[in-house]
Length: 117
Image (cartoon, rainbow, N blue to C red; front, side, top):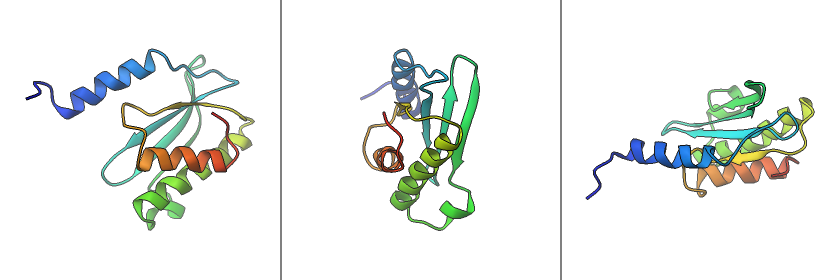
């Protein structure tokens, strides 16, 4: 039996990933947050401490979709907004989540949208 809660375990994984993953102006970090209701993604320049682009599941384009379609479309939207901000390449921060399901769908959607990581 585990003594730590699931959110605490995710926080430990998230900190472990963040120790290695750092976003710059040329190659920002795609930070993913997955809730039970939807998915969020941000392009973050850690050097300047700025968010360059973001996508939220509550946007009109994403709201009525199924969870997997929503994640794939969110990835395509973040790639589109990254291109508008002049970003070609990024690093992927899975936020302590396993790389499968909606997190993987978001990453694949961003790759299909033309973002490299």
